[in-house]
Length: 202
Image (cartoon, rainbow, N blue to C red; front, top):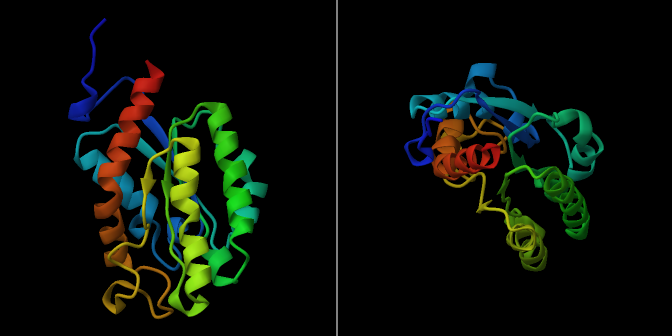
């Protein structure tokens, strides 16, 4: 049987089905579908030769609890890999960091039970919540990544948060150019995720 080379990225018989499971940052709040994270990530992967379908499973306004409640129907059984991007709305509501910790633990536990490769996208607390809250919230993601042995993209909004030119008027959601910056930052991590999904399928 002919073997494909994972490192070179390109093709195999069936596309990798990658689910982007998150909130408005994944959903593409107030953006055309083609300008959202899932669409732009898929385009970037295809431009590098990967045969990948990125499923947009983002719901604007979702907390980690809301995402957990829809887990079973949001992540289809045929998902080959999952990006988990959640927690911003818990933080914006000032919820105790133990709440997203508990919910993300359950989400990652369920994905581990499915034996699905995962990339965890980190979030950081806004400075107005204070140093103690920031410390506790920001620590969730490295803690979970270590506990479950999954790769971590440290901050989903790296290079975008606080940049007026890359955010919509609300200062919270990226513009199309902001999404481009997010995709550029996370892309190497996603390439490794796709490689893991290919390897798991062998």
